[in-house]
Length: 170
Image (cartoon, rainbow, N blue to C red):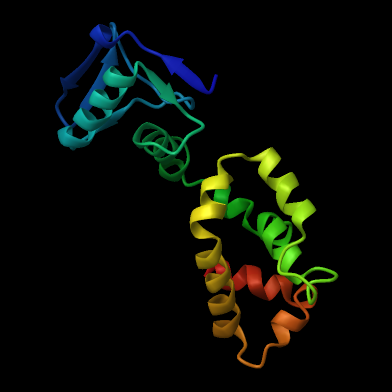
């Protein structure tokens, strides 16, 4: 379940010996991975509690304070990072990079069909595209210029994908 609904009156912040925890009814509220919504900083949990009480739900698909906290508990505190684990595949298959450096890239900056297909699959990216496309392209240029000032990576992106992935990971 990607969204969990709450009755605000059942939410409570409880102090324990070493930390604080958000309760829902008689049980500690947990992440999708089964970890308690607990932390030593009460202000952080008060923030989460207010957000949950006002909205009446926890949306795990959107970027919000609850989803970031839950991701941290479920993955980063468990020494797993799905973003880093998929970084290579995501970088190599990134539709913006493919459109910029793929076949025919000299005639256009984007393959409009690829971009539209990408937007249909992930409509949240629309805001980023309209608000940040120029910043993204500037970032691509800066990334490549930091890697190789002679432009060889830009001219042969496919041949330098592993180098790009390692640079991004670093």
